[in-house]
Amino acid sequence: MANSEEQINYVLTKAKENDVKFIRLWFTDILGFLKSFAITVEELELSLREGQGFDGSSIQGFARIDESDMVAMPDPSTFSVLPWRPTEGGAVARMFCDILQPDGAPYPGDPRYVLRRALQRAADMGFTYYVGPELEYFYFKDSGLNPQVLDRGGYFDLTPLDVASDLRRETVLTLEEMGIGVEYSHHEVAPSQHEIDLRYTDALTMADSAMTYRLVVKEIALKHGCYATFMPKPLHGENGSGMHTHQSLFRGDTNAFFDENAEDHLSETARHFIAGLLTHARAITVVTNQWVNSYKRLVPGFEAPCYISWARRNRSDLIRVPVYKPGKANATRVEYRSPDPACNPYLAFAVMLRAGLDGIEKKLPCPEPVEQNVYEMSAEQRAELGIGELPGDLWEAIEVAEESELIRDALGEHMFEKFIANKKIEWQEYRAQVTEYEVERYLPVL
Image (tube, rainbow, N blue to C red; front, top):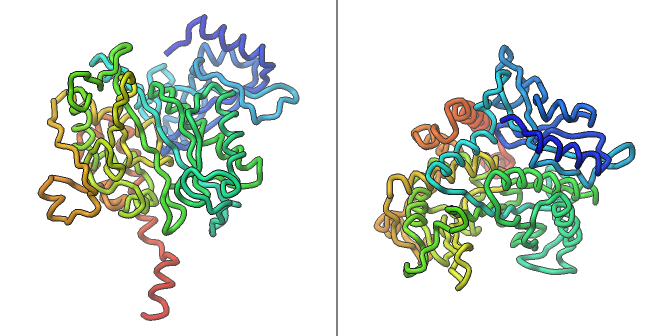
Protein backbone atom coordinates (compact mmCIF):
# COMPACT_ATOMS: atom_id res chain seq x y z
CA MET A 1 0.00 0.00 0.00
CA ALA A 2 3.07 2.26 0.24
CA ASN A 3 3.42 4.90 -2.46
CA SER A 4 6.43 4.78 -4.79
CA GLU A 5 8.98 7.56 -5.17
CA GLU A 6 7.65 8.21 -8.67
CA GLN A 7 4.09 8.63 -7.36
CA ILE A 8 5.21 10.89 -4.53
CA ASN A 9 7.26 13.10 -6.85
CA TYR A 10 4.34 13.30 -9.29
CA VAL A 11 2.00 14.67 -6.61
CA LEU A 12 4.58 17.08 -5.17
CA THR A 13 5.28 18.45 -8.66
CA LYS A 14 1.56 18.84 -9.43
CA ALA A 15 0.98 20.60 -6.12
CA LYS A 16 3.78 23.06 -6.85
CA GLU A 17 2.67 23.69 -10.45
CA ASN A 18 -0.87 24.49 -9.28
CA ASP A 19 0.21 26.58 -6.27
CA VAL A 20 -1.66 24.23 -3.92
CA LYS A 21 -1.72 25.18 -0.25
CA PHE A 22 -4.34 22.80 1.17
CA ILE A 23 -4.98 19.15 0.36
CA ARG A 24 -8.24 17.54 1.38
CA LEU A 25 -7.98 13.86 2.16
CA TRP A 26 -11.24 12.14 1.19
CA PHE A 27 -12.75 8.80 2.13
CA THR A 28 -16.25 7.44 2.75
CA ASP A 29 -18.00 5.83 5.69
CA ILE A 30 -19.97 2.61 5.22
CA LEU A 31 -23.09 4.49 4.08
CA GLY A 32 -21.24 6.33 1.32
CA PHE A 33 -21.05 9.75 2.94
CA LEU A 34 -17.93 11.62 1.95
CA LYS A 35 -15.54 12.40 4.81
CA SER A 36 -12.67 14.86 4.63
CA PHE A 37 -9.91 16.53 6.58
CA ALA A 38 -7.32 18.97 5.28
CA ILE A 39 -3.55 19.12 5.51
CA THR A 40 -1.21 21.85 4.32
CA VAL A 41 1.21 21.34 1.46
CA GLU A 42 4.05 21.30 4.00
CA GLU A 43 2.66 18.01 5.36
CA LEU A 44 2.03 16.49 1.94
CA GLU A 45 5.24 14.54 1.43
CA LEU A 46 5.13 12.94 4.87
CA SER A 47 1.47 12.03 4.38
CA LEU A 48 2.26 10.39 1.04
CA ARG A 49 5.01 8.33 2.66
CA GLU A 50 3.44 7.39 6.00
CA GLY A 51 -0.24 8.27 5.74
CA GLN A 52 -2.10 10.64 8.02
CA GLY A 53 -3.41 9.45 11.38
CA PHE A 54 -6.95 10.29 12.52
CA ASP A 55 -9.57 9.24 15.06
CA GLY A 56 -11.97 6.78 13.44
CA SER A 57 -14.26 6.27 16.44
CA SER A 58 -16.84 8.82 15.28
CA ILE A 59 -17.00 7.63 11.67
CA GLN A 60 -20.05 5.51 10.83
CA GLY A 61 -19.02 1.85 10.77
CA PHE A 62 -15.41 2.49 11.68
CA ALA A 63 -13.54 1.54 14.85
CA ARG A 64 -14.87 1.35 18.38
CA ILE A 65 -13.70 3.98 20.87
CA ASP A 66 -11.04 1.65 22.28
CA GLU A 67 -9.47 0.98 18.88
CA SER A 68 -9.96 4.32 17.20
CA ASP A 69 -6.56 5.02 15.63
CA MET A 70 -6.77 4.92 11.83
CA VAL A 71 -4.40 5.93 9.04
CA ALA A 72 -5.53 7.62 5.82
CA MET A 73 -3.09 6.73 3.04
CA PRO A 74 -3.52 9.09 0.05
CA ASP A 75 -3.84 7.53 -3.40
CA PRO A 76 -1.59 9.66 -5.68
CA SER A 77 -3.58 8.72 -8.79
CA THR A 78 -6.56 10.65 -7.42
CA PHE A 79 -4.79 14.01 -6.96
CA SER A 80 -6.91 16.80 -8.43
CA VAL A 81 -7.35 20.53 -7.83
CA LEU A 82 -10.87 21.55 -6.69
CA PRO A 83 -11.98 24.19 -9.24
CA TRP A 84 -14.74 25.65 -7.08
CA ARG A 85 -12.51 26.48 -4.12
CA PRO A 86 -10.99 29.99 -3.79
CA THR A 87 -7.34 30.33 -4.84
CA GLU A 88 -6.40 33.30 -2.68
CA GLY A 89 -3.51 32.16 -0.51
CA GLY A 90 -3.16 28.96 -2.55
CA ALA A 91 -5.35 26.44 -4.35
CA VAL A 92 -7.10 23.45 -2.76
CA ALA A 93 -6.63 19.89 -4.05
CA ARG A 94 -8.02 16.52 -3.05
CA MET A 95 -6.89 12.91 -2.90
CA PHE A 96 -8.92 9.82 -2.06
CA CYS A 97 -7.45 7.67 0.68
CA ASP A 98 -7.27 4.01 1.55
CA ILE A 99 -7.90 3.51 5.27
CA LEU A 100 -5.30 1.44 7.10
CA GLN A 101 -4.89 0.09 10.59
CA PRO A 102 -1.92 1.36 12.63
CA ASP A 103 0.15 -1.67 11.60
CA GLY A 104 -0.38 -0.82 7.92
CA ALA A 105 -2.93 -3.56 7.20
CA PRO A 106 -6.04 -2.56 5.20
CA TYR A 107 -8.98 -1.64 7.41
CA PRO A 108 -11.89 -4.06 6.72
CA GLY A 109 -14.46 -1.30 7.32
CA ASP A 110 -13.14 0.81 4.44
CA PRO A 111 -15.56 0.69 1.45
CA ARG A 112 -12.66 1.29 -0.94
CA TYR A 113 -10.97 -1.84 0.41
CA VAL A 114 -14.16 -3.87 -0.06
CA LEU A 115 -14.20 -2.91 -3.73
CA ARG A 116 -10.46 -3.60 -4.06
CA ARG A 117 -11.06 -7.14 -2.72
CA ALA A 118 -13.79 -7.75 -5.29
CA LEU A 119 -11.60 -6.41 -8.08
CA GLN A 120 -8.78 -8.70 -6.98
CA ARG A 121 -11.19 -11.63 -7.14
CA ALA A 122 -11.94 -10.65 -10.74
CA ALA A 123 -8.23 -10.20 -11.52
CA ASP A 124 -7.49 -13.68 -10.18
CA MET A 125 -9.99 -14.96 -12.75
CA GLY A 126 -8.29 -12.94 -15.50
CA PHE A 127 -10.80 -10.07 -15.65
CA THR A 128 -10.85 -6.29 -15.31
CA TYR A 129 -14.24 -4.84 -14.32
CA TYR A 130 -15.51 -1.71 -16.09
CA VAL A 131 -18.62 0.28 -15.20
CA GLY A 132 -20.54 3.26 -16.51
CA PRO A 133 -23.24 4.51 -14.10
CA GLU A 134 -26.04 6.92 -15.02
CA LEU A 135 -26.65 8.97 -11.89
CA GLU A 136 -29.94 10.90 -11.90
CA TYR A 137 -30.77 13.70 -9.49
CA PHE A 138 -33.17 16.58 -8.85
CA TYR A 139 -32.73 20.34 -8.55
CA PHE A 140 -34.99 22.09 -6.05
CA LYS A 141 -35.28 25.74 -5.01
CA ASP A 142 -34.09 24.84 -1.52
CA SER A 143 -33.69 21.91 0.87
CA GLY A 144 -37.01 22.54 2.64
CA LEU A 145 -39.62 19.95 3.54
CA ASN A 146 -41.83 20.87 0.56
CA PRO A 147 -39.61 20.46 -2.51
CA GLN A 148 -40.19 23.10 -5.20
CA VAL A 149 -39.01 22.17 -8.69
CA LEU A 150 -37.11 24.58 -10.95
CA ASP A 151 -38.93 23.51 -14.13
CA ARG A 152 -41.72 21.41 -15.56
CA GLY A 153 -39.56 19.92 -18.28
CA GLY A 154 -39.56 16.32 -19.38
CA TYR A 155 -37.20 13.81 -21.00
CA PHE A 156 -34.54 15.52 -23.18
CA ASP A 157 -36.41 18.86 -23.00
CA LEU A 158 -34.42 21.94 -23.95
CA THR A 159 -34.84 25.59 -22.99
CA PRO A 160 -36.99 27.37 -21.96
CA LEU A 161 -38.45 24.46 -20.00
CA ASP A 162 -34.99 23.17 -19.02
CA VAL A 163 -33.80 26.19 -17.05
CA ALA A 164 -31.11 24.07 -15.36
CA SER A 165 -29.12 23.43 -18.56
CA ASP A 166 -26.58 26.05 -17.49
CA LEU A 167 -26.14 24.27 -14.15
CA ARG A 168 -25.50 21.02 -15.96
CA ARG A 169 -23.07 22.74 -18.32
CA GLU A 170 -21.03 24.18 -15.47
CA THR A 171 -21.09 20.83 -13.68
CA VAL A 172 -19.77 19.02 -16.76
CA LEU A 173 -17.00 21.58 -17.26
CA THR A 174 -15.99 21.28 -13.60
CA LEU A 175 -15.87 17.49 -13.77
CA GLU A 176 -13.78 17.57 -16.93
CA GLU A 177 -11.42 20.10 -15.35
CA MET A 178 -10.88 17.51 -12.61
CA GLY A 179 -10.07 14.82 -15.18
CA ILE A 180 -13.45 13.04 -14.98
CA GLY A 181 -14.77 12.12 -18.42
CA VAL A 182 -18.41 12.91 -19.23
CA GLU A 183 -20.36 11.35 -22.10
CA TYR A 184 -23.47 13.53 -22.11
CA SER A 185 -26.04 15.28 -19.94
CA HIS A 186 -29.76 15.89 -20.32
CA HIS A 187 -33.08 16.58 -18.64
CA GLU A 188 -34.71 13.43 -17.30
CA VAL A 189 -38.38 12.34 -17.25
CA ALA A 190 -39.58 14.02 -14.04
CA PRO A 191 -39.85 17.78 -13.52
CA SER A 192 -36.48 19.25 -12.47
CA GLN A 193 -34.80 15.83 -12.82
CA HIS A 194 -31.45 15.57 -14.57
CA GLU A 195 -28.73 13.12 -15.55
CA ILE A 196 -25.03 13.37 -16.32
CA ASP A 197 -23.40 10.18 -17.58
CA LEU A 198 -19.75 9.53 -16.74
CA ARG A 199 -17.47 7.91 -19.30
CA TYR A 200 -16.97 4.15 -18.90
CA THR A 201 -13.86 3.24 -16.88
CA ASP A 202 -12.54 0.76 -14.31
CA ALA A 203 -14.71 0.34 -11.22
CA LEU A 204 -12.38 1.83 -8.59
CA THR A 205 -11.77 4.97 -10.63
CA MET A 206 -15.51 5.19 -11.28
CA ALA A 207 -16.44 4.85 -7.59
CA ASP A 208 -14.08 7.75 -6.79
CA SER A 209 -15.56 9.70 -9.72
CA ALA A 210 -19.13 9.02 -8.59
CA MET A 211 -18.35 10.41 -5.13
CA THR A 212 -16.75 13.48 -6.72
CA TYR A 213 -19.67 13.85 -9.13
CA ARG A 214 -22.24 13.92 -6.32
CA LEU A 215 -20.30 16.64 -4.52
CA VAL A 216 -19.72 18.72 -7.67
CA VAL A 217 -23.43 18.61 -8.59
CA LYS A 218 -24.32 19.88 -5.11
CA GLU A 219 -21.57 22.52 -5.05
CA ILE A 220 -22.59 24.02 -8.40
CA ALA A 221 -26.25 24.04 -7.38
CA LEU A 222 -25.42 25.78 -4.11
CA LYS A 223 -23.34 28.36 -5.97
CA HIS A 224 -26.44 29.27 -7.99
CA GLY A 225 -28.77 29.42 -5.01
CA CYS A 226 -30.56 26.10 -5.38
CA TYR A 227 -30.31 22.58 -3.99
CA ALA A 228 -29.45 19.28 -5.68
CA THR A 229 -30.45 15.93 -4.21
CA PHE A 230 -29.74 12.30 -5.04
CA MET A 231 -32.64 11.13 -2.86
CA PRO A 232 -34.15 8.16 -4.75
CA LYS A 233 -37.80 9.29 -4.62
CA PRO A 234 -38.28 12.91 -3.51
CA LEU A 235 -41.55 13.57 -5.37
CA HIS A 236 -44.76 11.55 -5.01
CA GLY A 237 -46.27 10.56 -8.34
CA GLU A 238 -43.10 11.21 -10.35
CA ASN A 239 -40.23 9.01 -11.47
CA GLY A 240 -37.49 8.46 -8.93
CA SER A 241 -33.76 8.76 -9.54
CA GLY A 242 -31.81 5.68 -10.55
CA MET A 243 -28.20 4.74 -11.08
CA HIS A 244 -28.45 2.38 -14.05
CA THR A 245 -25.04 0.71 -14.10
CA HIS A 246 -23.53 -0.51 -17.37
CA GLN A 247 -20.85 -3.11 -16.73
CA SER A 248 -18.52 -5.46 -18.55
CA LEU A 249 -15.50 -7.66 -17.98
CA PHE A 250 -12.35 -7.43 -20.09
CA ARG A 251 -9.47 -9.84 -20.60
CA GLY A 252 -6.68 -7.44 -21.46
CA ASP A 253 -8.08 -5.35 -24.32
CA THR A 254 -10.75 -7.89 -25.23
CA ASN A 255 -14.35 -7.60 -24.07
CA ALA A 256 -15.16 -10.95 -22.43
CA PHE A 257 -18.90 -10.29 -22.91
CA PHE A 258 -18.67 -10.28 -26.72
CA ASP A 259 -18.91 -13.33 -28.98
CA GLU A 260 -19.10 -12.60 -32.70
CA ASN A 261 -20.43 -16.11 -33.38
CA ALA A 262 -23.33 -15.95 -30.91
CA GLU A 263 -26.74 -15.04 -32.31
CA ASP A 264 -27.07 -12.04 -29.98
CA HIS A 265 -23.27 -11.52 -29.70
CA LEU A 266 -23.37 -12.34 -25.99
CA SER A 267 -20.63 -14.69 -24.83
CA GLU A 268 -21.14 -17.54 -22.38
CA THR A 269 -19.20 -15.44 -19.85
CA ALA A 270 -21.75 -12.64 -20.23
CA ARG A 271 -24.66 -15.07 -19.86
CA HIS A 272 -23.21 -16.57 -16.70
CA PHE A 273 -22.60 -13.04 -15.36
CA ILE A 274 -26.25 -12.15 -16.02
CA ALA A 275 -27.34 -15.39 -14.33
CA GLY A 276 -25.27 -14.48 -11.27
CA LEU A 277 -26.85 -11.03 -11.07
CA LEU A 278 -30.34 -12.51 -11.40
CA THR A 279 -29.62 -15.21 -8.80
CA HIS A 280 -28.34 -12.75 -6.20
CA ALA A 281 -30.49 -9.75 -7.15
CA ARG A 282 -32.68 -9.93 -4.05
CA ALA A 283 -29.68 -10.29 -1.74
CA ILE A 284 -27.63 -7.40 -3.15
CA THR A 285 -30.57 -4.98 -3.14
CA VAL A 286 -29.89 -3.93 0.45
CA VAL A 287 -26.60 -2.47 -0.85
CA THR A 288 -27.69 -1.12 -4.24
CA ASN A 289 -30.85 0.36 -2.68
CA GLN A 290 -29.81 1.02 0.89
CA TRP A 291 -32.34 3.55 2.17
CA VAL A 292 -35.97 3.34 3.32
CA ASN A 293 -36.79 5.82 0.56
CA SER A 294 -35.13 3.61 -2.08
CA TYR A 295 -38.14 1.29 -2.09
CA LYS A 296 -40.57 4.12 -2.89
CA ARG A 297 -38.85 4.18 -6.29
CA LEU A 298 -38.96 0.41 -6.90
CA VAL A 299 -42.71 0.29 -7.59
CA PRO A 300 -44.67 -0.37 -10.82
CA GLY A 301 -45.45 2.48 -13.16
CA PHE A 302 -42.35 4.66 -12.88
CA GLU A 303 -39.79 2.94 -15.15
CA ALA A 304 -37.93 1.37 -12.22
CA PRO A 305 -37.56 -2.42 -12.04
CA CYS A 306 -39.52 -4.47 -9.53
CA TYR A 307 -39.19 -7.90 -11.10
CA ILE A 308 -36.12 -10.06 -11.66
CA SER A 309 -35.78 -10.59 -15.39
CA TRP A 310 -33.56 -9.57 -18.29
CA ALA A 311 -34.13 -8.42 -21.84
CA ARG A 312 -32.30 -7.13 -24.88
CA ARG A 313 -34.50 -4.12 -25.55
CA ASN A 314 -37.18 -3.88 -22.88
CA ARG A 315 -36.37 -1.05 -20.45
CA SER A 316 -38.73 -2.31 -17.75
CA ASP A 317 -36.55 -5.29 -16.84
CA LEU A 318 -33.97 -5.45 -14.07
CA ILE A 319 -31.20 -6.20 -16.57
CA ARG A 320 -31.04 -4.82 -20.09
CA VAL A 321 -28.48 -5.74 -22.73
CA PRO A 322 -28.13 -2.85 -25.21
CA VAL A 323 -28.33 -3.90 -28.85
CA TYR A 324 -24.96 -4.67 -30.45
CA LYS A 325 -23.73 -2.19 -33.05
CA PRO A 326 -21.44 -3.58 -35.77
CA GLY A 327 -17.79 -2.78 -35.10
CA LYS A 328 -18.49 -1.92 -31.46
CA ALA A 329 -17.51 -5.19 -29.78
CA ASN A 330 -15.98 -3.40 -26.79
CA ALA A 331 -19.30 -1.68 -26.12
CA THR A 332 -21.05 -5.00 -25.37
CA ARG A 333 -22.29 -4.64 -21.81
CA VAL A 334 -24.93 -5.47 -19.25
CA GLU A 335 -27.06 -2.70 -17.73
CA TYR A 336 -28.25 -3.35 -14.16
CA ARG A 337 -31.16 -0.98 -13.54
CA SER A 338 -32.21 -1.19 -9.89
CA PRO A 339 -29.42 0.74 -8.06
CA ASP A 340 -30.11 4.32 -7.05
CA PRO A 341 -27.64 7.23 -6.88
CA ALA A 342 -27.76 7.48 -3.08
CA CYS A 343 -26.02 4.14 -2.58
CA ASN A 344 -22.39 3.70 -1.57
CA PRO A 345 -20.83 3.18 -5.04
CA TYR A 346 -17.83 1.23 -3.69
CA LEU A 347 -20.08 -1.35 -2.04
CA ALA A 348 -22.62 -1.38 -4.88
CA PHE A 349 -19.99 -2.09 -7.54
CA ALA A 350 -18.41 -4.72 -5.27
CA VAL A 351 -21.61 -6.73 -4.73
CA MET A 352 -22.72 -6.50 -8.36
CA LEU A 353 -19.30 -7.74 -9.46
CA ARG A 354 -19.25 -10.57 -6.93
CA ALA A 355 -22.76 -11.66 -7.96
CA GLY A 356 -21.72 -11.78 -11.61
CA LEU A 357 -18.46 -13.59 -10.86
CA ASP A 358 -20.37 -16.17 -8.86
CA GLY A 359 -22.44 -16.87 -11.96
CA ILE A 360 -19.25 -17.36 -13.98
CA GLU A 361 -17.53 -19.54 -11.37
CA LYS A 362 -20.56 -21.79 -10.97
CA LYS A 363 -21.53 -21.61 -14.65
CA LEU A 364 -25.07 -20.69 -13.63
CA PRO A 365 -27.55 -21.14 -16.51
CA CYS A 366 -28.99 -17.94 -17.92
CA PRO A 367 -32.78 -17.95 -18.40
CA GLU A 368 -34.33 -16.78 -21.64
CA PRO A 369 -34.80 -13.02 -22.00
CA VAL A 370 -38.26 -11.63 -21.34
CA GLU A 371 -39.21 -9.17 -24.06
CA GLN A 372 -42.85 -8.76 -22.98
CA ASN A 373 -43.83 -6.08 -20.46
CA VAL A 374 -43.40 -7.83 -17.12
CA TYR A 375 -45.66 -5.32 -15.36
CA GLU A 376 -48.62 -6.29 -17.54
CA MET A 377 -48.29 -10.00 -16.73
CA SER A 378 -50.40 -11.66 -14.10
CA ALA A 379 -48.77 -13.11 -11.02
CA GLU A 380 -49.43 -16.56 -12.45
CA GLN A 381 -47.66 -15.71 -15.71
CA ARG A 382 -44.63 -14.37 -13.87
CA ALA A 383 -44.52 -17.45 -11.66
CA GLU A 384 -44.72 -19.71 -14.72
CA LEU A 385 -41.71 -17.90 -16.24
CA GLY A 386 -39.82 -18.04 -12.92
CA ILE A 387 -39.74 -14.24 -12.57
CA GLY A 388 -39.21 -13.23 -8.96
CA GLU A 389 -39.55 -9.84 -7.29
CA LEU A 390 -37.05 -7.49 -5.68
CA PRO A 391 -37.59 -6.83 -1.95
CA GLY A 392 -40.56 -4.56 -1.33
CA ASP A 393 -39.02 -2.58 1.49
CA LEU A 394 -35.79 -2.16 3.42
CA TRP A 395 -36.72 -4.73 6.07
CA GLU A 396 -37.33 -7.46 3.50
CA ALA A 397 -34.02 -6.56 1.86
CA ILE A 398 -32.24 -6.87 5.22
CA GLU A 399 -33.79 -10.27 5.88
CA VAL A 400 -32.76 -11.57 2.45
CA ALA A 401 -29.22 -10.24 2.81
CA GLU A 402 -28.76 -11.85 6.21
CA GLU A 403 -29.30 -15.25 4.57
CA SER A 404 -26.79 -14.60 1.79
CA GLU A 405 -23.29 -16.03 2.08
CA LEU A 406 -22.28 -14.12 -1.04
CA ILE A 407 -23.09 -10.72 0.48
CA ARG A 408 -21.36 -11.60 3.73
CA ASP A 409 -18.26 -12.71 1.84
CA ALA A 410 -18.32 -9.76 -0.59
CA LEU A 411 -18.54 -7.15 2.16
CA GLY A 412 -16.42 -9.02 4.68
CA GLU A 413 -17.60 -9.92 8.18
CA HIS A 414 -16.83 -6.53 9.73
CA MET A 415 -18.50 -4.46 7.00
CA PHE A 416 -21.46 -6.83 6.75
CA GLU A 417 -22.24 -6.71 10.48
CA LYS A 418 -21.86 -2.92 10.71
CA PHE A 419 -23.89 -2.27 7.58
CA ILE A 420 -26.79 -4.54 8.53
CA ALA A 421 -26.87 -3.17 12.09
CA ASN A 422 -27.11 0.36 10.71
CA LYS A 423 -29.92 -0.59 8.32
CA LYS A 424 -31.90 -2.23 11.13
CA ILE A 425 -31.69 0.97 13.17
CA GLU A 426 -32.89 2.98 10.17
CA TRP A 427 -35.84 0.64 9.66
CA GLN A 428 -36.86 0.72 13.33
CA GLU A 429 -36.75 4.52 13.36
CA TYR A 430 -38.78 4.68 10.14
CA ARG A 431 -41.51 2.25 11.20
CA ALA A 432 -42.04 4.18 14.43
CA GLN A 433 -42.78 7.43 12.56
CA VAL A 434 -46.30 8.76 12.09
CA THR A 435 -46.32 10.12 8.55
CA GLU A 436 -48.25 12.99 6.99
CA TYR A 437 -50.05 10.40 4.83
CA GLU A 438 -51.41 8.62 7.92
CA VAL A 439 -52.55 11.83 9.59
CA GLU A 440 -54.31 13.10 6.45
CA ARG A 441 -55.96 9.74 5.71
CA TYR A 442 -56.94 8.47 9.12
CA LEU A 443 -57.26 11.36 11.57
CA PRO A 444 -60.49 12.76 10.06
CA VAL A 445 -62.24 9.38 9.93
CA LEU A 446 -60.96 7.19 12.75
